[in-house]
Length: 181
Image (tube, rainbow, N blue to C red; front, side, top):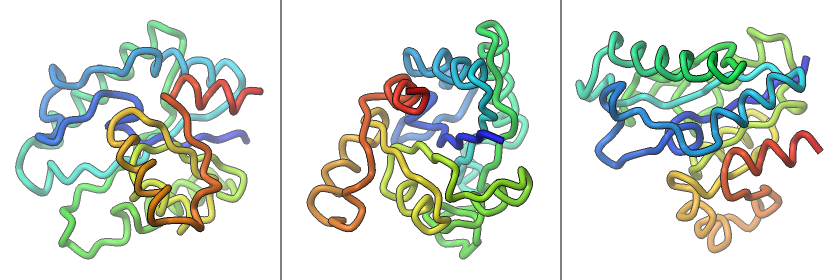
């Protein structure tokens, strides 16, 4: 099985420091949904792994999160694409869970559920916590400059010399083009 894992906010849709709190605020980044459809058409299973601490913080409820994901699914369907599963951490940063990135729990669960060794899986994110989660789960990390990606790229360059082998792309569409080469 060919599997790609994507972070959501900042990779698929525009992110906000004030959180994405409604389906109206959930707006795809140009080309991201088409990129997911391209992965699907090339035989890839696509899974989302997203920290959603807005749940723990009370910014939105599970029904609202489901409405955001339904909007994404509906838009993808129109393009002939799909996300095969969505995994999310509902906890806040101080909840000491195993699923919140940069911990590897969510990615490890995806590997187990899909019976795929993560060393063969690409995880595309826009933050240092995404890159560290991929590293902690022994997956292949890719960084996009959308969302928090420009800031994360600067941190990688300045502080994380051991992670400098992480390929960086302008957006999800460019990362998918590289995967499909």
